Length: 239
Image 1 (cartoon, rainbow, N blue to C red):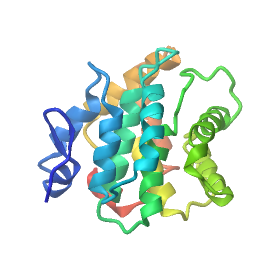
Image 2: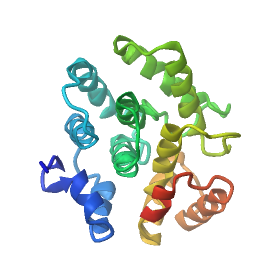
Image 3: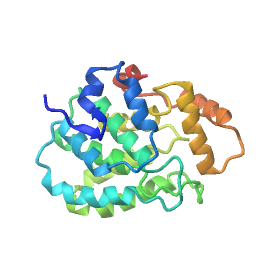
């Protein structure tokens, strides 16, 4: 099978999945890296090909534009930035690799996981629940208007965006696509080790300008997980 490297010196999604858990340190290195901007367009292309989506030329123009926007970090976020976008997208595709999804859902998986925190404001300047999620969705909808998203698809996507709001557990999650993205959104802080979790807690602490320690923030996060657990069996096996 042809290999599609995620980045230079970084193996394909297929290699990571087929060699799990021996490939876990490789994925950890990829997720933790933040010393240079990721090539998000190339990663999108690799993920689509790994999910057996070829010749999606009509979305390439949009993806080029969107991935450039995802690299812009106006509020200097240390957590919700292009590295978070790449991690959620790749982990989403790892979960989805051997799960039956329609062709359309595979494409939606890549673009939603990439854009779910689009133009994130960092520290919430407005404390209203779902404000940031709905803001990211509105930007997403404007960028992807040429992708011909139907009304029911837009409602579905809005629901997924809203349910990434961590403080509240969704009342009902029956959508397989939604389950994958919600799991991937928190897995980078859970699936490796405590030191990795503390690393991400430190990034979030800095972004939120919190006075609590990284240890306290990570402990709070773990306590919250009890009320918002992983949905997919595949996700649980990655931990």
